Amino acid sequence: MNTLFLKRCNICGIVTTMEEGQSKGSIINGIEGVESKGSRDIMVAKPGSSTGACDLVLRVLALVLTLVATIVLGVDKQTKIVSVQIVDTLPPFHVPATAEWHYLSAFVYFVVANAIACAYATISLLLSKVKGLGTLISIFDALMVALLFSCNGATTAIGVIGYQGNSHLRWNKVCNVFGKFCNQVAVSIILSLLGSIVFLLLVVLKLRRRS
Image 1 (cartoon, one colour):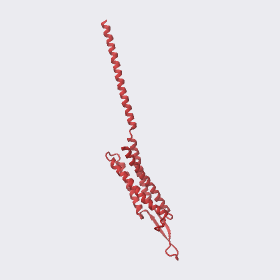
Image 2 (cartoon, rainbow, N blue to C red):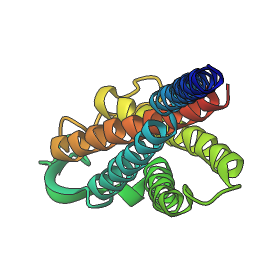
Image 3 (cartoon, rainbow, N blue to C red):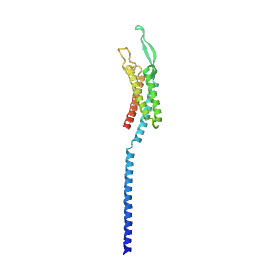
Image 4 (cartoon, rainbow, N blue to C red):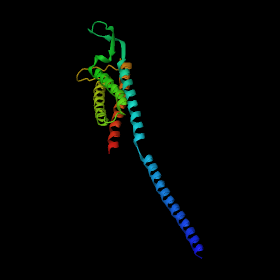
């Protein structure tokens, strides 16, 4: 009788130990499942990789736009034969006239500003992965926005005078003669304006990331 009672107690102990082991295992597995699920949720919600890729694409785009804008206006040159009337009683003289970007200070400012923005975009691509420079890069991004908007405004003002002239100041329009030159100026302004918008998006992206 005592022997049978001991056997039953041993069996109950084994069963109890097995049940406790299973319950602990299920609890551990449950905890691990929650932890693994939580880690997966964190990985999905983490925006660092997508934001870094977007930042890289925008900087490459800014580099390309400002580089092309600099080249388009930097090589802009056109020579035409124009008529010059000195005296009304004499026939007009036909002389060659050349339009180049460095004849106007606004165009010089435009080329230099876009070259600076292009060089900065290249440097920022190399320094964007360096820790501790995020604030400094954001400041220079904002400076590039101001620089490009100012040079675009100055060049656009001269371009409008070239297309329409100014009768009050007796500035004749020249784009009816130097059409190719003015068209290249317009294209370079559009490219530079797009580049300034890209730098503005970089600033907004950094502000949104910090918030």
